[in-house]
Length: 87
Image 1 (cartoon, rainbow, N blue to C red):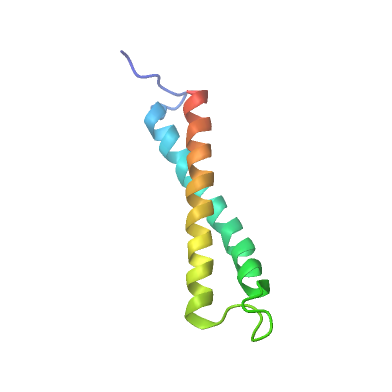
Image 2: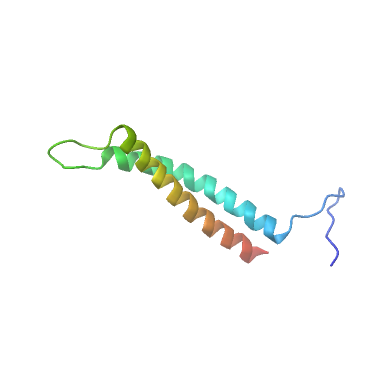
């Protein structure tokens, strides 16, 4: 099957390349949103209400990182699926 060539001689990205690009873009956006929401969530969460409020130090960084990875993976997966449907 011949590869489609653009107006300046470059070839168009394959469907797999588009799905990869969708995953990477979705992962970046999801991780940024996860950083914002994770920071707010970890700082404002009430851990043992009467002893302290929010997380500190290593616990805070772990919570933010976990939230970033979860939201990045989820949003990246949905963006990859969307790009796959568009191919």
